[in-house]
Figure 1 (spheres, rainbow, N blue to C red):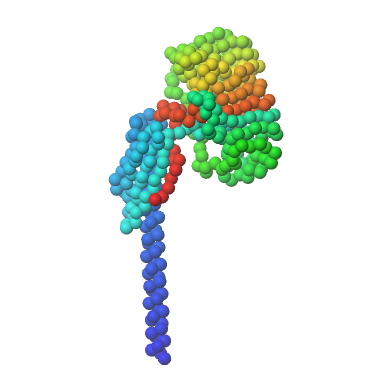
Figure 2 (cartoon, rainbow, N blue to C red; figure 1 turned 30 degrees about the horizontal axis):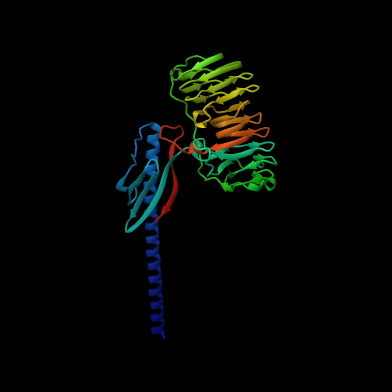
Length: 387
């Protein structure tokens, strides 16, 4: 009996040891597999980090995608190898192979050149998005007016109740993006009464609006003020403020870049006019103040030819255009108000946005086309998968 008991205990002990050993081996394999995956991810992240740093510094050159062969991870017995295919126009496919001990994991990421302006947002706000009295949101293509094969986006990062306030009778042909921690039934006011031709979607957790940085001009050239003024490409530079008199016009000829450290003031019926074959990039630290029927007249009808970048910490943009507004506004810290039933074409990314009196906003699909010389440009992963 004793011998039998001892044998049974020995057999049970051997079985437990075997189970424990197999569990330990599975655990080691699982840990090694995770370490290999982390190494593969690190390869993609490093390549992306270097590419975006070079973009910001202006040193990135065509197809200068970092590649690695058995690159070791610091303080880890892992390494990764990174290769790529594709080109700038069509996007790059990065393949990263991570190794740890006897485990190998492969991660493939598709990377495209993009910016907040090129991501189909007709309107995007950090906080309030308000559209009054039968507002309309849609899409068009300034490069091909017959092309409407895209759905525009609008959205807010705020989770406050009613922060997306779209009045009854509005026609929203757009997806509505909200924060992942938000509830669409509370964020979107009167959701059950709206006509929405699109989906309600959640923003990525890491969605980020980078600050707009002004050009590195040195000394100010004074101010721009008067009634009838013309600026050419050679007049690009840093100025203290802009003030245009009643019924006055600031005409833009050529490609002009202005950095205004103060306010842009447009008195009654004053306008900044972008002539044909011209463009304006306007960076401003203060506010844009438009009195009755004052605003911007982009005669090219191409939004990309008028880009307005808010570079201050707290700003206001008040536009009372008497004609359609064609432009891009990127001012993440600004409160923007559009009056007078204005139809706005382009992309408007601000802190707060109010569209009054039955206005319309259309995203310009042509803004999807970006280059390495554009503002706010960066490489972004649009697809990431493990193979």
